[in-house]
Image (cartoon, rainbow, N blue to C red):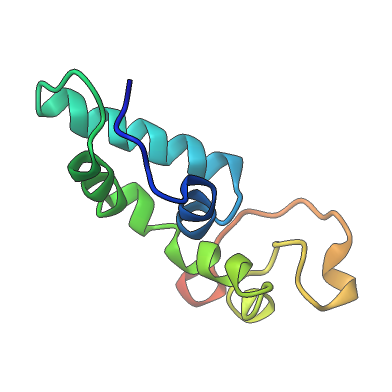
Length: 103
């Protein structure tokens, strides 16, 4: 079995924002780190390696926004439901591209 994580639920919420996608990515990255280290289980070092991975760092701004009651989502993202603006609660197809990075 993997090494236990203290306050696991809170830890996972803080680093994934409650998104199933980021939880899946986080688990995949921890397993990759463990396999690359030829380990038999996931250790805290593998967890830290996963948190520094490119795929996890790419989602930090949206995760942080959800952790902070969706603050800034209406500024940074054009398609994220859950912000305090009621118009954004409507489901609309759009790509998840930050407005600042859109070309």
